[in-house]
Image (cartoon, rainbow, N blue to C red; front, side):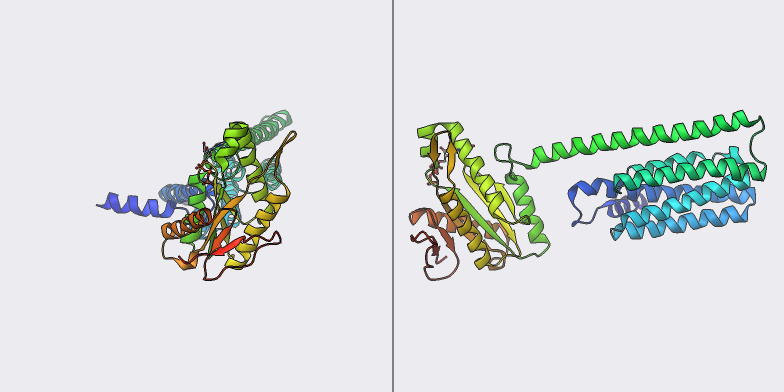
Length: 374
Ligand SMILES: Nc1nc2c(ncn2[C@@H]2O[C@H](COP(=O)(O)OP(=O)(O)OP(=O)(O)O)[C@@H](O)[C@H]2O)c(=O)[nH]1
């Protein structure tokens, strides 16, 4: 029973906030564990420090517990850097004070490398990480050489040993930094490639079916109003049949490129079927979405896909729906799909939106926007 409660609380603490980007969730969980393990470690030190009878060390150790608790709160509120800096500050104080009070060979210096590690795997910018690490290395060299020497706890053996000690610390710190930074960089790059492969359509480079629906789900969950546009190339089969499959592929790539160029950066584009695309336009009313769709239609007519001497014109049928028109995401997709179907069955090359009257055509003259009675 107790085990279950503990496990549930642990999982609850580890769960990243839903609004946090998926690529940041791993770091979020790693640091949450770092703070929790640090608290457990500091608690385990309490009886030993009590035995050593050092009230100053006990005070700093207790402050470290409090600091890690504060770091958890800050971390949960997305103040990641501030949380980490607090923890680093507390740890450095403990390492320095522990070394000064208990002597150099009581093991406090081992934690220095943990501090470096935490900084290096954090989400801080690379040059800030380097700056921090170099400052800490310099600080530790100064404290070892000056502070320990001044307090008479420096090991005997002459200057050569002191230089050797400093060199070892500087080299070990630099090597450690390079290895961890490089490892972290390679892991992140590989992870990004896998994530991109898993979420993007390899032919067109836009989101794949699963990823675009995940994006739609996220917008829906966050209660953001958005327009959903479903578009499908007309008579695409005839392009394949007449010019070959690879010509059809080029048309799809061209279409995805035009979509990307025409829409805003905040809009999401996904390929949900052979020649069918789904576009999410956050915080966009029908009129704005309609003008975006017609802009696309206009551009596609002006800039058809060209393959050597061959021009491959293609038109689009589109269905547009608004998130506030329905009560579930599934209904929203179905509504856009019905409007797309209506655009197809009404002669293709047109956009069907909500409402009750036929809207005038775009500059070309033919009826480009139809209002469906759903
Ligand atoms: N080149 C290429 N063709 C594809 C791809 N995926 C699906 N298709 C083809 O897309 C065509 C879709 O044909 P249909 O569903 O009949 O649609 P359509 O010819 O566009 O007709 P309407 O949608 O009714 O205007 C089929 O010939 C599929 O083989 C792809 O990745 N590349």
